[in-house]
Length: 344
Ligand SMILES: [Zn+2]
Ligand SMILES: [Zn+2]
Image (cartoon, rainbow, N blue to C red):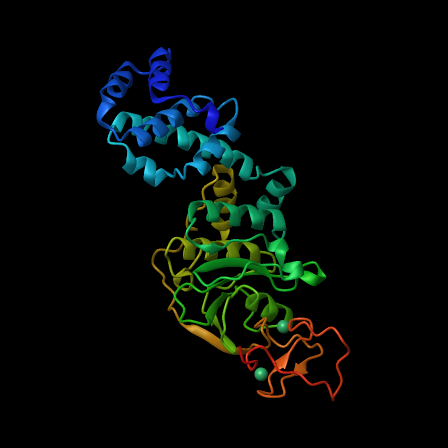
């Protein structure tokens, strides 16, 4: 690619020959003599490449990555406002085109689910998570709910929001939201519109989302609006996730049940998740209904996995043989010193 890079002069000539270039912009380009040469050349080259967007967006993606160009440094690195606008607009078109690829269009089955009294499926949950992730790139979580089957979630230190299913191993029974927004360290809040307990599988899923060195994780049940039927858990889970992402305390929201499905339907059609309709006059008190301390074990920092442990001869803590690379059979006389107690 380096050898193919045209010189600044060639680029300027090319730019001038562009039939579709705005006259005003062209004029500005000619006046751009005092820009730092290397930077100017990169931006001109980018501007040129942007015109090929429709034909081959891979070339543009490579260029942007290679030159470490982002919206921010495009915005700050060129003093020419017209060129800047041109580049920014083209990047937005590019992102919008990518968005179409990224976002799922509701098919007839999913439309039917949202327009009737059926449980939301994985696809609707994941599509909603994708939208939130796109709208709030600084937040963590919003991972595919299908990662729950193998406890394959990425663990988070930063703020996250995640919709999970209470029991993915039996095909799923109930959607809820977990987040560490507005929580102290090593604490998460559960936004569950039906239950206030923590079955083993849910406990494992929640722990698998959090990166921590602590010996326990506090799981608080937020005092959220409760669903009024047996099929709306997914809607409430997404409503609570959406509120949290928008900086609203989900526990204060009094949703209007009959408007919720229609709202989600419209949001997914528009590819923009906005807070769900709430009853204006009411407000819930933000209180925690229940708090459960979940003990974490081993170097994997997971709850009791109900499997075989090996005990450290020094600290006495439990470890999974596989996590500490003990492959031979474990028995009572097995000697073992954990990584925490092993001197460097
Ligand atoms: Zn382990
Ligand atoms: Zn030890």
